[in-house]
Image 1 (spheres, rainbow, N blue to C red):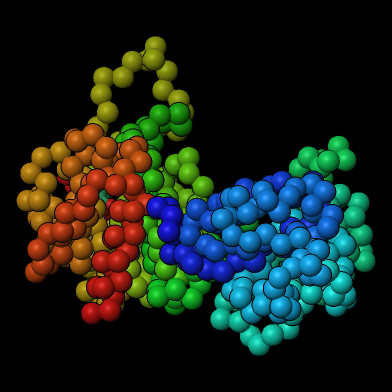
Image 2 (cartoon, rainbow, N blue to C red; image 1 turned 135 degrees about the vertical axis):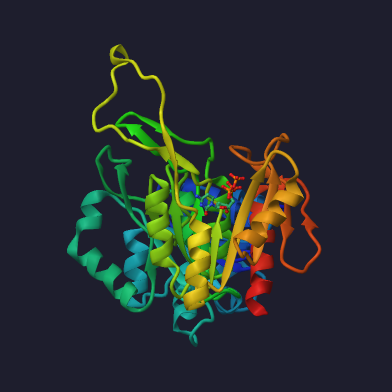
Amino acid sequence: MSEKSIPPLKEKRILLGVTGSIAAYKAVELASRLTQAGALVDTILTQAATRFVAPLTFQSVTARQAYADQDLWNGQEHVLHVKLAEWADIIVIAPATANTIAKLAHGLAEDLLSLTALSFTSSPPRIITPSFLIAPAMDAGLWKNPAIQKNVATLKKQGALTIGPEQGHLASGLDAAGRMSEPENIFREIRYQLSRRGPLAGKKFVVTAGPTQEPIDPVRFLGNPSSGKQGFAVAQAALDQGAQVTLIAGPTALAAPRGAEKIDVQTAEEMTNAVLSNCPRADALVMTAAVADFKPAKSYAQKLKKENGLTGINLKRTQDILTQVGRLKKKTGWPKIVVGFAAETENLIANAQDKLNKKALNLIVANNIAQPGRGFQSDTNQAILLAPGSVPKTLPLMTKEKTAVEILARITLLLKN
Ligand code: CTP
């Protein structure tokens, strides 16, 4: 099993259909990405697809079977399409040409891929829904054609999920809609769809991430170097377990995980409002954000000019979000679980313990940001988990993604109790 294995994809049986489009070469990257994430990927190529890319290419990146059309007739397997349709948890056709879409919409079972996909979609309801994903790829004129749109609509009505196509450069030279979605976007969609029945399905998570910025004037602010990486990783880990996630983020350069409802904020005050309005009925709040403790007492409407001089900036305290959440929880019972972070440079455990008590938290994630490979900007973290009445748990130095998975495992336990 791959080191990078991620829960919703681990050991999932994905049947990848590849049809005859120039985007077929990108399907190799998708197959590789899914395999690295722990999925078992078998591939079926149509005859036209093999003109662009070979079954061997897929076999090489997936270490599994890649079937071409002639396997329907010459292969060793008995009734191959039935076997594959029974085997798959999910079928992904990427790229899906107008021709294959038409075959599937009209029930034309004439090659290994259409036979398998039609057998698959007509079998009893799947555990995973939607279990049939198509990523169309064709020239813009074709994509706009009403007959093709009708075929796509037919498949959607039958429960298929379409991903893209996206606007962009097409092989014909046009810049228009028709380009297959990027493998990374298809991967993210598959990851999200496969996660929906995870152990935290139905649970609502609110996660904060990144820094806040407190404006001095329209071009200057007080801030901190938080990258948001740990918070975004927590949001992704919660999504991977099936939770519904609201991600409240200060300014960061990161893309939100697929499926998260992202609320962008700038200041501590905006973050406070967003958190408080999302706490009711939240199962867990994870305050990963590095919220400013002070803001300029006065924020200037116009840019300060240096000629005018500036002798100092008076500061005033921002509100402590967790303290307010504590009050809300006392009154309403929401959020059920409140998790804080403690970024410290000294007396890590004592300071974290103090915050745990003062802010009435269910869990605090403490890290010593003065040490290399931990805290702000870094891709790795080394955290200690402290909860009331239990022995502190020291996690190893590891990626923020893995740290997030550990934090989620602990929250899941707290939610069970
Ligand atoms: N936090 C908060 N509201 C603030 C500041 C921090 O809710 N205005 C949250 C953070 O998101 C984090 C926890 O409180 O989960 C601890 O933040 P940290 O900055 O380590 O501690 P502070 O409480 O700000 O205390 P100090 O800066 O004195 O260490």
